[in-house]
Length: 211
Image (cartoon, rainbow, N blue to C red):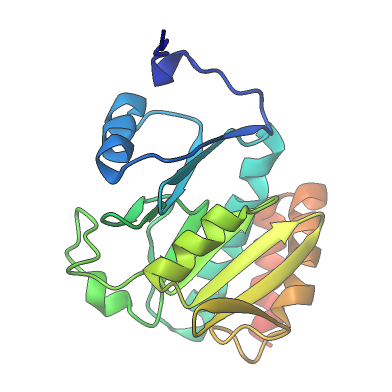
């Protein structure tokens, strides 16, 4: 006898995740509807495998701080940007993923007027940011979507990955911010925000970059 458990009945402890295999795209779309938008989990789907992750409470703060850092730098540089947060990006039948946060920078003009993301109309985000451990399913989904740059912040370190062909290659330099040592700067600024407050950190960052 097969027992069916409603997806809403599954409770994940913070910091844990589950994987569901051999899941069709139609079932994935149905699960998204069942889970709803007001949830505290992140999802990643790639070619039949769905991962549902429950982030730790401490998981949320670093990527929000990093988002503030990015927008501050872009403002100082006079560049346009659009923050799409944890929007779900879907390539039907193949991949679906929710970044912790993501940005359109080089292609900011391409998403003006966008109220519902459709990768058949709009390009993928220029930069996706993930905190903590990012799974192979998540990275495979980003590759399928063609996201050119992914940052992973974990254990007080930032790693920058650049899409080259059909895989990501770690880079010491961010193509989005080629003149700044982001792999060194981001961990320092995140810790400063935690120790001294985000507002104070951002004021000091503006002063530093405006000199």
